[in-house]
Structures are given as C-alpha cells and as structure tokens.
Length: 212
Image (cartoon, rainbow, N blue to C red; front, side, top):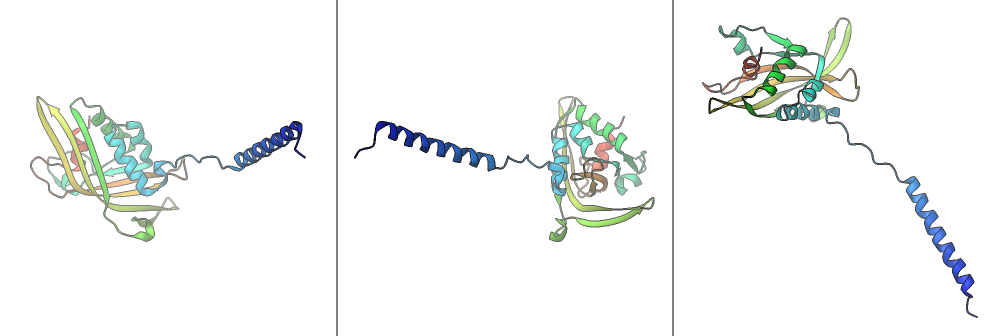
C-alpha cells in the first residue's frame, strides 16, 4: 500500500525539523573565535613590536613598549668620548622626545631595525632571568644580548646618508604594570658599534643626533 501525499509531506517536514535542530545545536556548542594574542604577550613578540614601531615611525606604539622606569644607557665608548657632552642615560620622557624627533624629521626617509637574540637558552625562551631588590620590593626581569642592526637613512642637500649601527645591546624586560599579561622594555644598555667607522655610528650616537 503506497503512502499518502499527506504522510509523505509530514515525514519530509519532520526530517527538515530534525536537521534544523541538529544544526542549531551544533552552532550553539561551536566555540567563539578567540582574539589574536597581543604582540607584547611574549618576550620576543615585544622586541619585534618595538622594532616595528621604529620602522613604522609610530611613536605611540614605541611609547607603549616602555616600562614607566625605563632607561636607555649610552655606550661606554660614547660616554668616554671627550666630545660626547651628554649624560650617561635618559629616562622615558626624554627618550620618547628624542625618538619622536627622529620619526618626525623631514630628512629621515627610512628607518630599519633588526634585533637578533644572541642567547641560546631554551629553558628561558632565549632570555636570561634575573632578580633584583629595589626599595624593599623584589621583582623578576628577563634580559638578553641582541645584535642590533639599525639603519637610519637621511636625505640632506641631495645627499643620502645611511647611519648604520652594527652593534650589540643588552635589553631587559619586565611585565607591564598596567597589563599583567603583557611585557615592556625596562632597560636598554647600548654596548656600542661592533665595526665603528667614519660613517658608522652607535645606537647612542643616533639618539644624540636628534636630541633637541
């Protein structure tokens, strides 16, 4: 005995309803996509974010990388130079002023920066771990030695100048006090240019060029 058109319609409707309910249940249990992790959520990510801020000439991103107690220590070679005439180090406010002046300079056509971690220590993600006590408060910081390859290309009076740094730097990182899951740069110690020549300079020397 063949099925009636009514029974066929009801069966088809039931099948469609079951498929819809199954699809809805599947969609309800599907996890929502997670946002991409912030670049500064890892140590090397913070270093790369810092380098990219230079290349993008983005002073807001640059400032975001710096710990409130940040300091840039100039290289010993520069500090010992009788023509240096500047202090041993600068803090966050002055460093940001100097960097902003470099980013905004009409003569600066291009900035390139590569910071390569020279420490191999898988247990600490390539960074050494240190501890220090300040004002009766202990904290932990991470640091690594970096090969600093920096090019600041200027155009002045129809002449192109490539200020090239081929040196090393110690870079120290601490957690961001405002975002506990992010990292900041606490201290940079410029160790000078490895192959300093007549046209080459140090990281310290580049900062000195743009101080007001």
